[in-house]
Length: 190
Ligand code: ADP
Image (cartoon, rainbow, N blue to C red):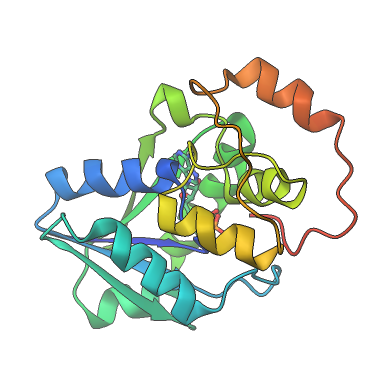
C-alpha cells in the first residue's frame, strides 16, 4: 500500500521525520509530498525543501520525495496511493485535520486519511517554532537535522549560536518562552 505524506515542510523538522519513519514501517512506500499552501509564503523554495527532505530520509529505502501544486487527492489518484498520512499534535491540529480529511473524502471516497499521533517529545514542535527561535538567534539543532539548521541560520543571516541545549525543552517551558516573543516579520505560519 502506498501512502502520501503531504505538507509544507518549511522546513522539515524532527517531528515530521518521526512521522515519516513510523509511516515507512507501516506502508510499502511513503511519498513525502511537498505541496504549496496558498495561505503561506514559504521561507524555502520548493526545490530547497525537497533537497532538505531527501538529505534527511536517505536511510529509508521505501521513502520518496516529490512535489505537486494541485490537490493532494489528484496526485494520490495518479499514483494509486490509498492513504494520506498526517500527523496530530494538539487539539487545534485535530479541527483542521478533520476538516481536511472530510473534504478529501468528498473528493475521493476510496482514499483514507490516516493520522499518526506525535511522539511525546515532538508534541510541541512545528516549522514555525523553529523559524521563530532561529530568527532570534536561538539554537534549533535539537529540533531539525543539522543541514536544515544551517540553511535556516543562513536565511536569517544568523551564525549558529555557540550554546547548545543539553536536552529537549519540555513543552510547558517552550510555550511560556514563546509567548514572550513578538517576531517582527515571520515569513509564514506552518
Ligand atoms: P501543512 O502546512 O500541510 O500543515 P506541515 O509541514 O506543517 O504542513 O505539516 C505536515 C503534517 O505533519 C501535518 O499533518 C502536521 O500536523 C504534521 N506535523 C507537523 N509537525 C509535527 C510533529 N511535531 N509531530 C507530528 N506531526 C507533525
